[in-house]
Every structure is written in structure tokens, then in C-alpha cells.
Amino acid sequence: MTYDRIPSVDELMALLADCADAWDRPDRSGDAVAILDHGLQVASVLAERNPQDEELQVAGLVHDIGHYLVPGDEEGHGTHAARAVEDLLGPRVARLVALHIPAKRYLATADPDLVLSPESARTLGCQGGPMTRQEAAAFEADPDFAAAVALRRADDAGKVVGLRVEGLESWRPVVERVAAAAR
Image (cartoon, rainbow, N blue to C red):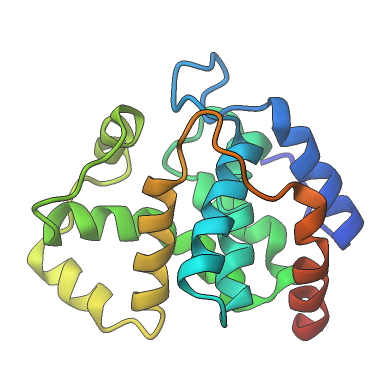
């Protein structure tokens, strides 16, 4: 790992802006939307479905920055993103970011109607595959279970090429509130 923890909202917003031309796979063969577009779509879905939970919305905005921080690390991208934002955005946002991969593994076991993008289906294997029944039961007992599943479902919904959502700067006040609450 060669990245630092993100110390300020300005630096986080600059990093997110850099993700406008960054993809989940360095060769752009993964999902068809850039990391920034994907994060904006996920945050938008979460704002609509969970308007009271700004930490969850911000987790959706930043959940995939690990692809930018450590390109090519499919298994660890959630952990990298969580570590990078924890000091700034707080432990719950970081935890939700880290849980978006276990939530995919959970849903692969628990939801027979789950439809993953081809890239998400491909990476499921290197991320541990579907959970066992025991892993799923433990995950269901997690206090952030419902929020993690909501983030994952928004993650799956936020991969629409050309979808128009609010731009990055519209999220600054929300990010600032979450960062202020984390201090």
C-alpha cells in the first residue's frame, strides 16, 4: 500500500474528481462506468432510499476509491478505501465501505434473484465466493447488516452508462457534515 489516509474534505473531493477518469480495472475492461460516476450513482440511490442516513450515502460515494488507490486489487479495494477515509469520515463510514464486499458475498448466498454485473460476477470468486451458511448467519448478526446490504444493492444499481445524477460538488455539504460529526 502506497497511499495515505485522506486528511480533509478538500483532498477527498479532489481524489474523487480524479476518479472521473479512473476505472475499477486499469485496462477499463471491468464495469462500464468510471469510479466517480459509479460512486455518484450509488450515493444517489442511497439518498433516495435512505434519506436519513448521510453516513451510508457518503459510504456509497467513496466505496470504490480503493480501485484508484491500489489499482488491480479486487479483493482488497474495500479495505483500502475504508482505511483511507476512516480518520476523516469516521468508523461507521469506513466499516460500511469495507463491508460492501462481504455484503456481495452474502447476497450471492441469500438472494436467488441476485443479478450481478459481469465484472461483479467475475470478482466474486477472488473475493471469497458466496458465503457459507455459517458466514451468512454471522453477517446477519452484524449491527450494520441492513446498511451494508443497502449499500451493496445500490452498488449493483449504480452501473448505468450515461445516467444523469447530481454532480460531485452537490455532495460537498453532506461530506462536510459527516466529516464534522466524525471529529
